Image 1 (cartoon, one colour):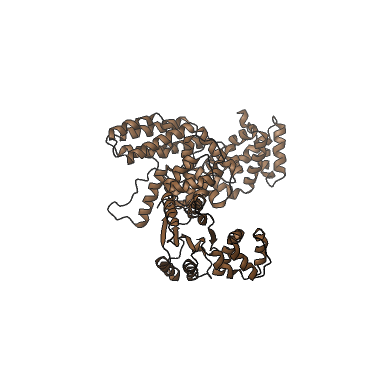
Image 2 (tube, rainbow, N blue to C red):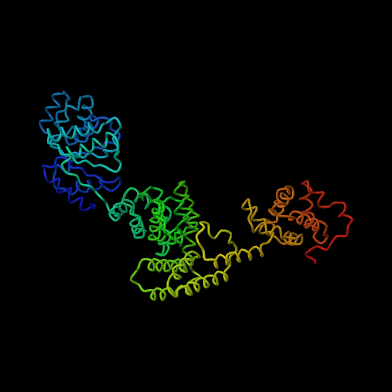
Length: 582
């Protein structure tokens, strides 16, 4: 039953005096306490407005429950009139006026207040919350006995608020609760809050300027736990930091924030984990690659459902934004500058994001809209050849796969791929080391374009770039190895003579270190360190560059490499012309 209908039903039951014990059950975090507070605040019944509330969380005995109820009732002591005055006299509390009820409270701490429970609680409405979170020493049978006794003997009415999904399903507790439902509860209402209702409550507690995008995504994820929805909204606010974001950018980042936050806070029953979401959110989600004649396993069925969920959210692929998001959720550490850089890139790529959003809308329509004709789909897809350069390789691949399934569509799909490759080849791509960190499927022609780009970068890489990369990143990859192996003594000499002072300082120090540890580095860089020595020797013996020659000699004089700079065989030999003079 939805929140509004449950509220109406609870108001009706409270008006029926013969319903002594009403149970309000439902899943944890779906708004039962919130619902009660709304009913209490709007009620015209004084007993409902002045209902006493107690949570069983942490209470280990029924006596503690009674004491909590009496303490919450004492501030209203004036309503007890002469009856309460008589009890105070009986205990010689020394209280003579109702206006002194706070002093009475202090005096009563030394008395056996539990004897007052029948009088103080008579004819009251009591709300008991968190039944499933009771102390282990407090037996359910004790609570049930208290409720049954006071409802029958002292006309006390009860509203029991219960997270029934948290109640133990085995042993005596389940058996006692079944008996309780059968013999004590007069009416039970089960709250089934909708995602829209849960969000409407959470967003009031934690406002966000991304409300519309968050509401759509939480509804798709089916989040009904108000506490979890609130955490999701808080995460979005912290990650996005109140930035004014175009709708296309919100469509890119908000669904991912909602999905990964919901996974982290366990808001999706039997949902995916981070590993699945990062690695399977790819364009070929509809091509499962399994034996169509075999019955899918339970795990495969779950994964199918997860893919459908991510498709509906619009999370088609993961990149650095999702990696930063997962790192934040797992560690609690937030790199605002890194997120700012990503968001800034998205802002700069707004037109591309809009093009990708249009492509994803088409893919969604092509899959789900069985009413649209194949001819109309082909006509609609014609726009993507012109905007292919704005698409990412994964969406481009998915467009090709989808269009290839339509009669006459493969040629259009290939045209989109070709247009993407042409735009890619015309651009500047200094780094294509890891364009597919999550191994998403890519069209073979696009893969070939990436390989060609890598080859061009390798061909143009310089020894200076490679060495600086090694210094800055404390490591190297294929590009750096290729550049270092290919570099000649002339390349090293030209680099040393031409680089700026700061780079020269770092370059010389690092290359000397490599030469000193040549056994390690020669395996990766071949004869690079020997060519470096040859270049330094040529410079140190060049009279046209006395200051640079002196600098090189000073650097080598402080190391074990000094003999290599001017070995006897070289000193008496004719010196070749410096590379810069050739």
